[in-house]
Amino acid sequence: MYETIPQKPGNRLLNYLKEAKEELKKVTWPSRANTVRYSILIFAVSIAVAAYFGILDYGLNAGLDALLTAVRN
Image 1 (spheres, rainbow, N blue to C red):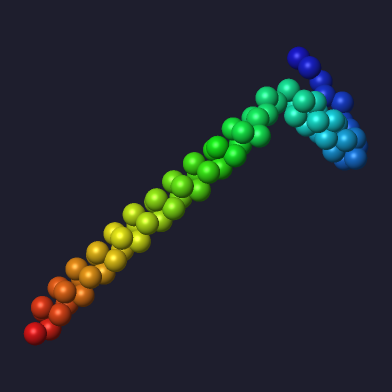
Image 2: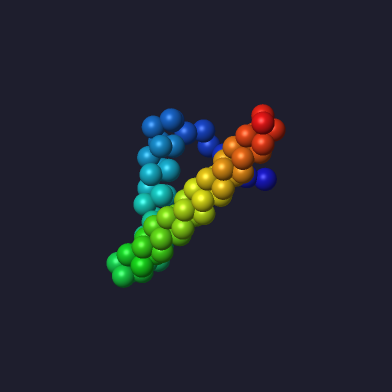
């Protein structure tokens, strides 16, 4: 089998940073247009989900208030 040679902590960090830099060179980065398009999409979906849960919360709260009012009277 393979034997690993112990490295000094500083060497391990340096090797890690070098390998990370090499891996980042292999990444296919999206274009600016795609980045803007996806950012707008994520923002719109986030607003829609927040609105959905806000309406759901309001409806459940109103229903619970009506139920509690009916039970108290």
